[in-house]
Amino acid sequence: MSWTDTLLLGHFLEEDQVGIYRVAFRMAAVVTLVQAAVNSYAAPLFAECHASGDRTGLKLALRQTTLLNVAFSVPAFVALVAVPAWWLGWFGDAFVAGSMCLVWLAVGQVVNALCGPVMYLLNMTGHERQAQRIVWIAAMGNLVMNVWAIPRFGIEGAAAATAFSMGLWNVAAAVAVKRLLGLSVWDAVRGGQNSTNA
Image (cartoon, rainbow, N blue to C red; front, side, top):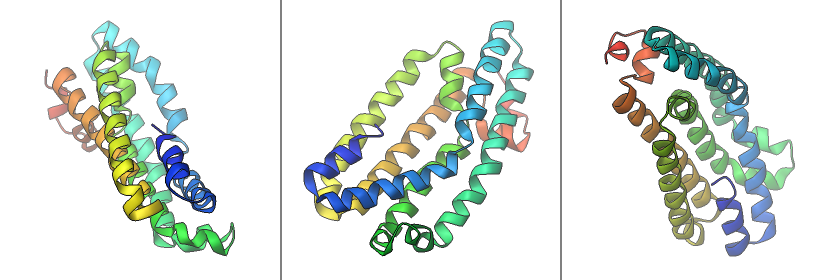
């Protein structure tokens, strides 16, 4: 899914527009820079807790990893969306045109962080098929939305479509985690009791 927007931009728009978009895309990825490492650490913990039936441990691992993701991601998100033109201006005046792209893509990334490591949780607890289904639906939605949005709105359309798909992917996975495992990422972060219910 990560290359759908770029490939379609190359088909519909000029090369300079694709370059501006790619810089904005990579800069927005800073929002979840730490997330890959945190989630990779959490994945075996999820599998171990699930295999041993340790729901308290599973809830704790989910809470800790989500809080870590949020702690690093939210400040980065705020910094980017507060002055997107300033950040992009470091790459040259032409890249300031990607400011709205950066905002859209950063929104998608922060939703990713706020939903926590839900895809890892599904995959590590025997729900790989559900995770794959979510990925395919989000990927198809991303393709359709980009095909519709890019000719009409250019790089901003691609950014909005990609951000929406990213949010859809993560929210759908969080809902699946609640339905299949009885765990709520948001309850876990708040330390609530609902996430421990079977």
